[in-house]
Every structure is written in structure tokens, then in C-alpha cells.
Length: 188
Image 1 (cartoon, rainbow, N blue to C red):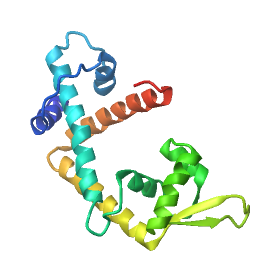
Image 2 (cartoon, helix red, strand yellow; image 1 turned 90 degrees about the vertical axis):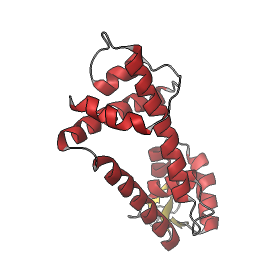
Image 3 (cartoon, rainbow, N blue to C red; image 1 turned 120 degrees about the vertical axis):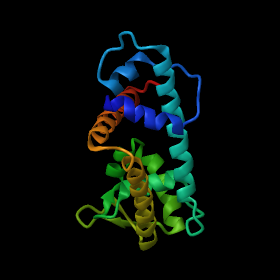
Image 4 (tube, one colour; image 1 turned 30 degrees about the vertical axis):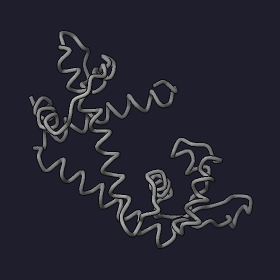
């Protein structure tokens, strides 16, 4: 069973945790009802998730805080990612993609402008609209962070065959759907 092999490959990499793992989340991840599933697998999956989130946040934080980008925070990088390297974006669109208010984004953008990562311009079509884009320094930080993500994904999929990659992708899509729904509904 490829799904079990994926879990077996991931679990040894992570530490334990005691938090209860919900049946609903398990159903979303595995795509089936929980019937006869032992508490052990639910606890193991919970351990994987909790440690995975912690590890990703920790590793990403260290990848962001390089000597060159010592003034960068994880939040700064998320804003930079949302702005992207393409055409300037309006503040409302960036705020929506981050799931924050325009006011909250303004605080972050002000900081990034001061640090030299982001530039503000007025729209030529409507001078009331503020557009944001990455400065050369911001684009460089974006590309460095993108490289970190590519290396992370390459390391994960290098251990898996094609079938296992599909199982992992579907499990992560289901997991993301679960958390997106919880986030949208404002439930923890």
C-alpha cells in the first residue's frame, strides 16, 4: 500500500506529540471514513503533522534569516511571495491572497519599503490605487526563497516512486482543503 509507505517514510523523521488527532481530518487526508482505525495511527499522523509544521517553520525561518537578509521576517517573506515578481499588484489583491485586511498589509508594506524590498507606485489608470512591486533587492530575496522551496520539495520527492508521489500529493491536497475550510470558517 503506497500510502502506508509514505507515512512509514515520514514518521521516523519526526518527534512525538500527544495532541488528539480528529477523525474528520483523518478522513480528509486519507479520503475515507474512519472505521476500525486504531488510535495509534491517528496519534502517529498527529505527531507527523505537528512536528512537520514546526520543522517547516523553523527551517524556513533560518533560510530567510541569512546574513544578507538579517532584517527579514517570515511575515515579510510571505508578503514578498504574495507580491511576486511579475507586474505590480494592487494592495487589495495582495491582501486578499494573504487573507489579511488592507490595513494589516499596509503596515507590512511600509516596513518592506523602508527596508528596500518593496516599491509603491500609483496606478496610471486610477491615481487612488496604490500598486506594489518588488525592488531588485526584493526580487533577489524572492528568488532565494523560491530556491529554498525547490530544494525542500526535491528532497521530499527524491525518496518516493511515482505512485507514492501521487498519494502524497492527494493527501496534502486533502489536508490543505481541510485547513482552508477551517480557516475560512474561522474555526481552530
